[in-house]
Length: 402
Ligand SMILES: Cc1ncc(COP(=O)(O)O)c(C=O)c1O
View 1: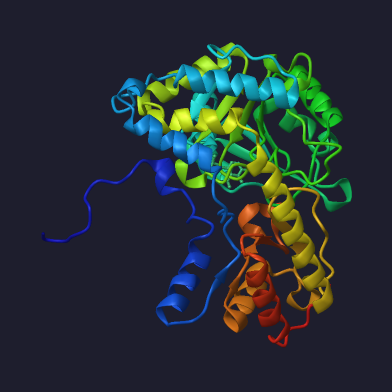
View 2: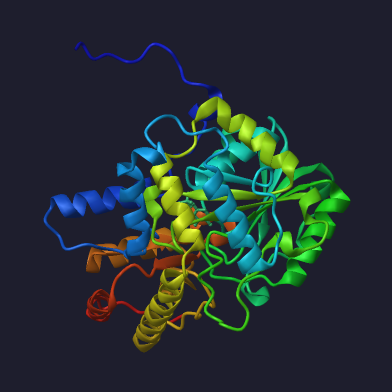
């Protein structure tokens, strides 16, 4: 093939996309691996655990069983068994009653659903309120719609829970959508039902679509207060849509399984967009996801115990170095201000730690402007891996003072 520059430009919103936030750190990692260095990647939140064996067994059974009829196209709305399982999960976990037919929608991962919901509701110039630091994919999906993004600060002194007073009146007047994510990636912050009550009231008042992302709802460490759903709030369905994922809670990130839940209208609208771009999930994955949601949820309990133990090991280790990091109440992340010696330059800190030790963290700026000066550690190394990381960091000769 003769290689020459491509003659046709891509669409403007795509051309204007900034480079993927983790592209730089991925490049460091690739170069280090190519040079034969030992790398420990604590940058990406890729679970290292396995799904429930019963879920894998259901995948295999459904793929083998002619009666399951999985190998043709699925229906756009997803398999009825999975929709019923989603409704059963919401009833059991949150006491929320959903009509499986009209108020649930299987997704090819919640990332897909979040992007398609933005496509369904955001036009060029519409304002999206993103409390940040946040999951970076929200930025790209909104930019592809040509939306304007207002970043509201999540502050440590408020447990990283959004304060509505931090949204200026003119932004509130213009806004079309607000995305909230609790338990929060990257901060580990948790919101209670009072927060969702306020969010629903605020969004009803301002006619703003409230998107609740609860990808980490099963990874809260306090057994007495499991993280709630926005749909527990009476009147939420008039403004809110919720997104859930099996990636982290059920160790199924590679399976691409998530779902949306909420009022019939936004669910149908999201379904309409999806019907133009995909054909739902592989049927056997849907039946296995249904098994995951209706099973004993032991894998979620095991994950809570696992990440809690890793959090404790990591926090204790960091503190022993002299880096006084906070201990998060949920998720698989530690979110901490970079030590004083780097004067708030999170990229410089992450780079130097990586160069000296091969341990890769995530720079906080990747999570939005209010993430600057912080960094994220993913708890994806096992106990031996954590011990190794802490040894490498201790030997690095760095000043960890906060
Ligand atoms: C807050 C948040 N929402 C959604 C997702 C995407 O999950 P999924 O694998 O279901 O697309 C992630 C993944 O890291 C996340 O952190």
